[in-house]
Length: 249
Image 1: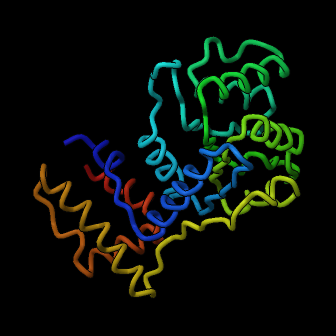
Image 2: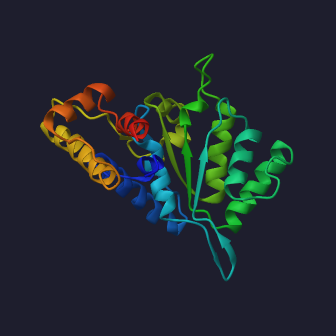
């Protein structure tokens, strides 16, 4: 059994499923190409934000139809200290554009806008959204944030962003952007004191156990003692649980 099975194995829990539902609702509402809503997914590292976005994208993959290639969902990672050129390049690459690094800021922006319209892109998902805040000065990179807002307006797309909790500051400082966003969705770490969350944490361990047990003889990972040890080792973060299990494999 390869250790990547842990990375590929997705176990939805209540907060994860609720977030999936809201993203799907935003995606459905984007079909009319009106003023689409925005949604922020926030949480600490290891709470499953990236898994959530990638899982949704995998259900809405590009396809070729009578009118050419359709890319309903554009998924991109915001590079550290983004500029318009660097972010546009990443987004062009996500759309499989030829030579995505070619061109000036204006040329890239035009190409991206036209390609999104041509590919009928309805939803833009941006991971690592906290990179819109400069780490040195702690200031929002307004020029790029304003550019993104104009791009979303011009293409009538819905914007889903994910990042660390403080990334909501990027949205809050732009009044036109903020009025389109729903209340942010929190992906919290599990709390052992909360009995319901403890049961979910243990159930996730059990699901991992059953998958690993297909290839290895292992102790009961989801017993009360082992579950508590996993909680202490991970602080209730599923991402850390997965790392421990990958190393074990």
